[in-house]
Image 1 (cartoon, rainbow, N blue to C red):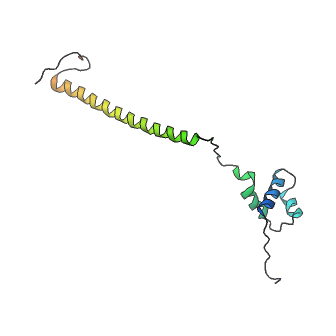
Image 2 (image 1 turned 60 degrees about the vertical axis):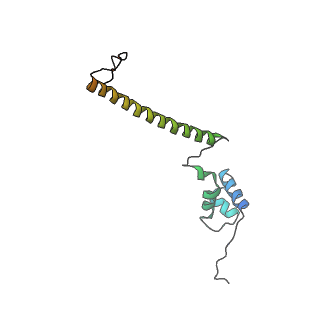
Image 3 (image 1 turned 135 degrees about the vertical axis):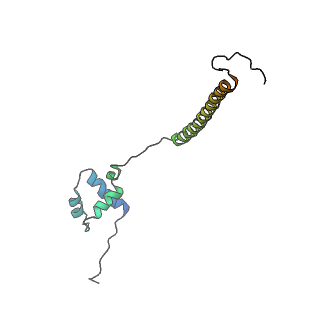
Length: 122
């Protein structure tokens, strides 16, 4: 059996303890390996990636209070509704602008200037 590789399993609590001590400055990674007889060179580095605080570096972390997500959804719905209303208003404005141009061209009436003129039926 001497040719077989022996696997050592460490508990989650043990891993977290070692990482905490390293992050608090009690030990370097090398010292922790010696103190706790951890054989693998990259073992502690993997634990740091998984359990350490350094895994947050370079990442965006969003902290939301309860209800913020719902409020965000409400605001997104309102934004969508307002965009649709704005689109409708733009279309209505274009239609009215075309109607004014048509009235001037076909009827000879400048609706912009003569809003009080009654249009006779033709």
